[in-house]
Each structure stands twice: as C-alpha cells, then as structure tokens.
Length: 260
Image 1 (spheres, rainbow, N blue to C red):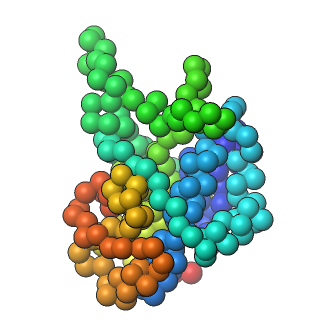
Image 2: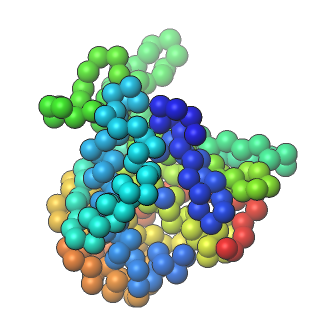
C-alpha cells in the first residue's frame, strides 16, 4: 500500500485488489438487501472521512481496520444512510497484454462540460471535481486552496499469486464501487466470463438526489429473489432503472478468471 491513501490493497478470494479507493449468488439472491444496507453505510463513512491525503483526520488504513469495519457492519444492521450523487461524465478503458501488463484508465470531466473553461490552443476542457468539496465546518474535505477533493474515480487492478489476474473500471459516479463489486464477484465467485459479468443486470443503492428515501435502482432482468430481498430490507424501496449512469457502463478485462 502506498502511504497517503493514494492506492489501497485489500484481499478478496485470494486476490489482491488494488484501487484508488468492494457470491454471484449473494448479489443476485436473498442477501441483496443486506448488501445494500452495507453499501449505504460504507458510502456515508467515505463521505465523512475521504479528502486530500494531507487533510484527512484519520489514516486511510484505519478505515480498513477490522474494528472499524465491524462498527460499520453494526451500523448497517441498525440503520441506513443515503448519500448525494451529482450527474457526471466519465469513460473507463481497460487493456492488458500477453506479458501480464495491464492498464485501467478512467477519464472524466465530472459534469458534462466540466468547469466550462476551455483551453483554446489545445481544446482541452477543465474538469470541475472541486464540486466534490464540502463547505461544512470542520470536515476534512472542506473547500480550501491547494488541496485535492474527494473524487469518485475507481480504476481497479486485481492480483493473485501468479501476478495480474484482472483489470476493471466503470463509469457511474458515486456508484463505481458498487458496479465493480458486481463485476468482480460475478467473475471470480460466480465464474462468469467477463463479458457475461458486465452484461448481467445490476442493482445500485441510489443517492439522496435520486431517491431521498435511500432506495435501490434495479435494471430489467434482476431476479425476483433479489427484488424480494431488497424489498424485505428496512427502508429500501425499488426504482426501475434504465441502462444509464446509475448502473454504470462497466468495462472489465479478466485475464485468468476462476471460481473460488
């Protein structure tokens, strides 16, 4: 792990997952509602703490400590906390070669035309990720000169004992961790081909601007068992979602998929 919270490494099913920041049957069955509650609580925890590495009040590794994660799990069992997601403009591109090199690239202006400032000689439009700052007093992500805001971009590399195993990325604003959760677990746990994992219908916990009640957007094709699980979870309602930024247009290139 690099210091300063620029990269984070965690292990999932014997795969080391590296990212700038989450069983196939579990996501698409009776436990979907419980996972949705966990996502809502994790989103709120992210919003409380994530900021420029020099201004965070806790070290990034603290957020991954077993005790902290256990506290979040307890919170997920007791309540739910929706978050805000603005509109965005993002592409994800992944590639890998036969020698085990891989790239996960995400390009984004954040909003459709970013800051609306055009550099005339190159035609480059400046992004507006400063919109992710908060004005809340005492918050580590409070707007200030010379610091970087919390951002939504989440390129992913997964390694196992033999080296690079998968490269993943997606659009989707604040939903990017959830989309990666779906594609990675469906590939390595569900045993799906990457193309099948990306094409499979998804559900995401919506932000407060999309659904103030903290509901879940589901795409056509999400199983009835998944829908029943989500509806049976306290505080969750279901919104039928079209193929849009809510569910993310995921890109995944798995080199050596396997079932765990």
